[in-house]
Image (cartoon, rainbow, N blue to C red; front, side):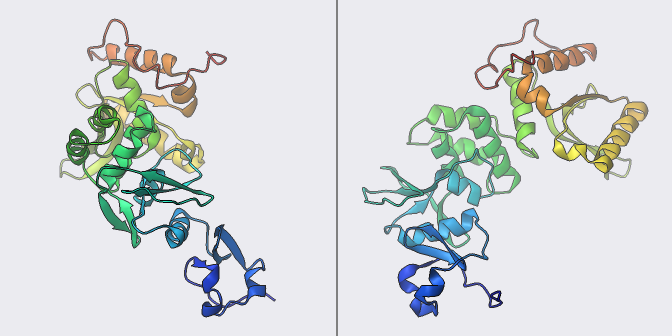
Amino acid sequence: MPDTSPPLPGPFLRAEAKNLGVSDRRLRSPDFRTVFTGVVVDARIPDTVVVRSRAAMLVCPEGGVLSHWTAARLWGGVVPDNEWIHVAFMRDVRFRVSGAKPHRFRHRLDIRFRHGLPVTSPAQTFCHLARHLGLVDLVALGDRLVKKGRCTPDDLIAYAQNWPGQCRVEALSAAKLVRKGVDSVPESALRLLMVLAGLREPEVNIRLRDVEGNVRFRIELGYEDALLAIEYDGRWHEEPAQKAHDEERRSGLNERDGWTFVIVTADDLYGLPEQLLERIRSAMESLGIPVPAVLSDGWRRHFRVDTAAA
């Protein structure tokens, strides 16, 4: 017979099960799952970073603060997959729990609270991850933190300039490339590909307004002075309705307002960046946008080239 009682709120220590009215027999049943050694949660509660973070705090020594990848996700950032729950300390502590990763620092931890949990601030999280993420992933994280309203590009620059930890130069370089209004990781990557190749940086989130000042259309990346739009088509563009909407919008802007579009797919960006750059460069040159005679190779260390496809 299925359990129709409401789930117990959040993870709890096994040692506290009886106080919560959970018998040993039921605790060993499929009704509960183990999050960390000694910590369980009602199996009906989804496995999320918030749930696992709460579980880690139950077995964490005093002074622990959620950090790195975990903090980034708690703030709504996008970072590459990482299996650990990361916890930072300002002192040497013994914390060995399977599935949790401790970090020890001499510098002060800039503590905020998110979902009621102690978390490193968005800016400090960004700087901590400068040691672990590549430039593209770090800028994409910064773009998302700004999009979520957790900080501004200036906040990140100011914090990185005074960063006492490792990889200050990397953190500052990435912070200076963070922009407002970026909607996705691929948009961050596309913009960086162009910048690192030496092309003029495109404007982000161009808003086209009618005579009354209302926003009619939005261009992800482009050059409004030359009417060139560069847009990334993700998986959502494979939906027939979305695809038809985008094609109608682009056709109207092209025929009525004179915009030229360069459409970029995941295969272009993540498999054929060199060919993509030449296509963008050619479009820019044809519309009178100054371009370098030879593109810089600075993008190559940050983007994979699919030699088989090339």
